[in-house]
Image (cartoon, rainbow, N blue to C red; front, side, top):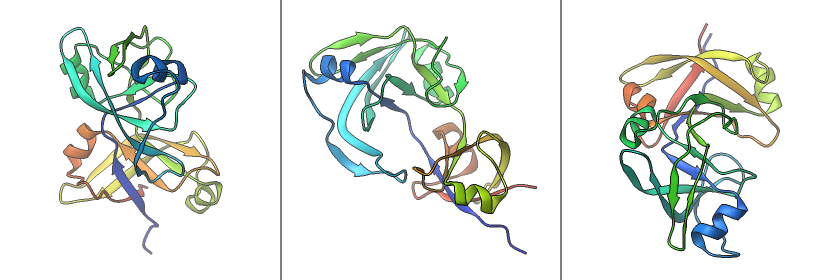
Length: 192
């Protein structure tokens, strides 16, 4: 019997901004401009970009994802951390306490954050009905095998369940490159 599968996407480096930081970087009352919508409902890649400045180097023109969030967060790969000179912990999105800070530079200003840099923990977004079909629960840790020319089984994948999600797994660029996942993504399934 074939196991059910789902989309596995590569999530490249990006920034989530809060309202106050958006105002500083892009001007009072500025809004993010939708470039294209992402697989998760309501989430989008914006036209706006910022430079992320670390102690060692700068990542220029980093994408901003919308909509705005309660707290600014920067998600990068471990390779990006080496470039920046700031080693971030692997964390679930939103868990930014005790993480390194960086400087963000926009067209209207700059901010120096004292925390917010993370390497996003690989995760699978599921609706409650998806979780039931896969026999998993919110925050459960699973392994996921991907079907690519360089097949890999990713361990330590957190399941995130919400009625606001669409079924898809996210890995960072280092993980995606290691597994040979292209721009269109690939298919993955929960491993035994």
